[in-house]
Image 1: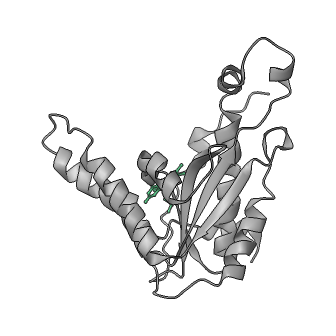
Image 2 (image 1 turned 90 degrees about the vertical axis):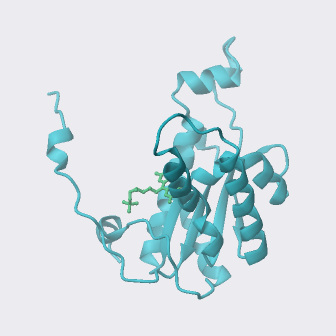
Length: 205
Ligand SMILES: Cc1cc2nc3c(=O)[nH]c(=O)nc-3n(C[C@H](O)[C@H](O)[C@H](O)COP(=O)(O)O)c2cc1C
């Protein structure tokens, strides 16, 4: 598939056929994801492939419980909002595979030579750690499209990331960043029309 075609056809897929995704395909998506640019070439990522249905269900349950414990505000819609968010945060339990992205703290060149600590430098540079994660995940999504899979980026489950990190037996050096759910789309993906981007472009010559 041409890169442009992959970019143009990518859309979030949340409902999948009940078919396993071969491990070598998941590893190929990860290999392509790991070719993304990273802050100071730190390549701070590591990946956990989860295909164990029971574990996915247990993780989704923890996310749902965490959400349930967040106090609602006065809005009449708050109950509806919570149940909507619950689905977007837990549908990964029905995916044939989930790839969890974890990252180690990178060491910036600047923090070695100034009085600022790592967190201050990271904030000053506009969170290059999260920017790095974004580049990696986008590569993964495009790789999935190229390989005829559907995928969806999920940050909502991270509301329970401490518990999820324990369930995934992660060490303290790693920070859980996001999930990517992967599978064969249950129906033909339909890409919604994009707004006219020219309205959002300013040229300074
Ligand atoms: C940082 C980030 C976090 C996201 N988290 C979730 C999520 O937790 N659950 C979900 O269903 N979709 C999630 N999405 C997918 C977006 O909802 C989706 O990309 C957006 O609605 C645009 O649709 P498209 O991907 O089909 O173009 C996330 C996307 C991004 C970029």
